[in-house]
Length: 368
Image 1 (tube, helix red, strand yellow):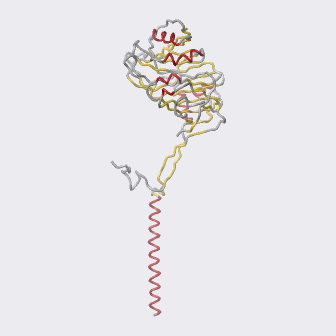
Image 2 (spheres, helix red, strand yellow; image 1 turned 180 degrees about the vertical axis):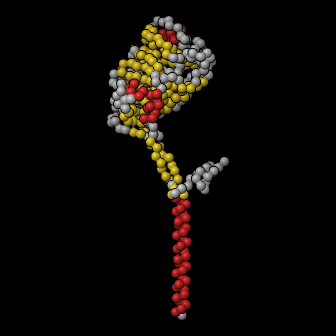
Image 3 (cartoon, one colour; image 1 turned 90 degrees about the vertical axis):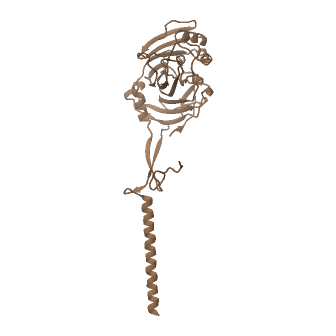
């Protein structure tokens, strides 16, 4: 159900969304957690959290990137933290979940019926047989500048500028975020390039609420002349990761490489109108939608961020799902009619031969 695609890149311009997150009662040890494709998710001490699926919508017009991201999470954590690097000053607001519904509908596969002649398992006379047998503080720290702080629903969002990954780690620790060992090492390439960070803490309004289900999406906007989707921090994940990416741009886009995961696959490619929630992202303009799906069976092999570039051609693609159905005529299996008809023809032929032989025998007797 998916078509193949490569990955190609450009420079450093990141797409990233932040949503399931944030944090905790400081602690030295953290239970192993799933990392998300665009950041690191960490549960509170002695808790666990899992991300079943990361789905993001990226809209890019050549100058500005917008990312709407949502996560489906499970586990027993009451709080979690998530950090995402961004290439420039970002604006953060709640996203519209309707955009995912609209794009899923636009990219839905085409269903076709494919008939087969001979009965299969589940068809008469084989029915019944399958053939198989039986809230952080607002204080700063050296090397860290808090450039913005917002409360968005259940999200407590801090926008940071950091010149030192260790200083960033200290600030997060001092403000209730506890990061896994080695994360500072993965953050250093972003610090070296002067990127900033969005740190999000999920702070449910209901006491003792546990993180679970599909979280509200967040929408992040920043200036960018290139399309990059951050994945480097996901190498800290303890389990296989899955990424679904909707890319809205002027043309069909493709990633530069697999960055250590399975080959990215195209689920859909084609133009979509600039209406509804999608139009809110595209300014009412028609855009080319490329839907990518990728698995990361060994997250530790992730070696960079997804860099996306224009494909060689704006070739449209839609998956086709075939639904096999037994061929019937008037509700009667065609194979049964064929066999019955064949048997009838054989019987008729046999009867004709008998009559011919009898006539010949009668003629011979009369001539004698």
